[in-house]
Image 1: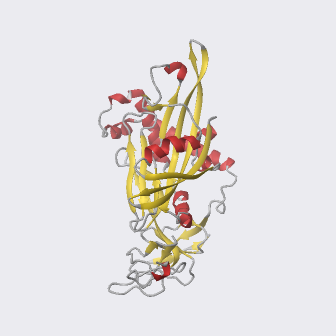
Image 2 (image 1 turned 180 degrees about the vertical axis):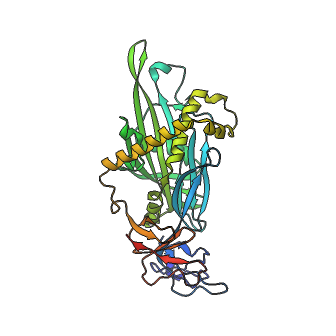
Length: 393
């Protein structure tokens, strides 16, 4: 069936390919045929959706990922499409004092296959001289998995895919490529502390629940080496991470057309330095307390409360020092390179950065944003919300 001949029960049509667009109370959709992001005026109660009001654009809101298990603080904030489902969050790991918390969450379109996912970080240790035969590859020492360091592409192929995509069918690797800027965007500690860091992406195709999916998975490998003394002299040991793991997926053939939406989501992530400072302080205290004794997740909150203010403030100072370092060395952090435009939000009375290329932006008092290419689009028509145009800065 031709996309333009779709018999979907709606008067709305995608302006890109002409396909019918199913009604959506959020006034936002991804075209099921060409993958275009669409926005339209929501009608009033009892009104029919008018013909031809769908335009290319996106509707976003701010989502805060809150650490409900431990500190009660927001871990980060990001922009997500209105109407998409959010699952997962921050999880504390009682047997891993070096990395006691990770984030695993997905933001998915309930009317399609599109999804953004954050995968949990992994930490490893490698000290063959000291460990000898006591700890084999794959075992755990103080919570970290024992495994020799590997390059980021090998890690994506041999660690990430088997562990997080083992339930899909007919998985094929389509291509892989380095992403040199990813460690900088991830604020890699290795870049400022003498370690090494490299980023890459891998694109795969597979079948899930009868639908053929394409997915692009990104990740960074950070390696920290340090000298250790043994009977045979000084040797090198390693502590390394596979982190900043995230992915974008869509129905096969439509992943590239959703790049602007997914790009807007990942570049909007704003970590909370206060949570980071608390996390570092808790990790230090857990290492001192021998985490194996901790039996209940509720004790994380107690440990957070017991962590001294001086320790938290020092970790917070470390965070800001790292940001200052990046501001000096990252000469290409311009808004143009990051594909964002600055707009003034009249409700919050502050400047916000939103995806570039649309030209027209609106904000409401719920913290939502609409971006569209259409100069005549007005989200106030047929809406009970108060939208105000945003001025480019």
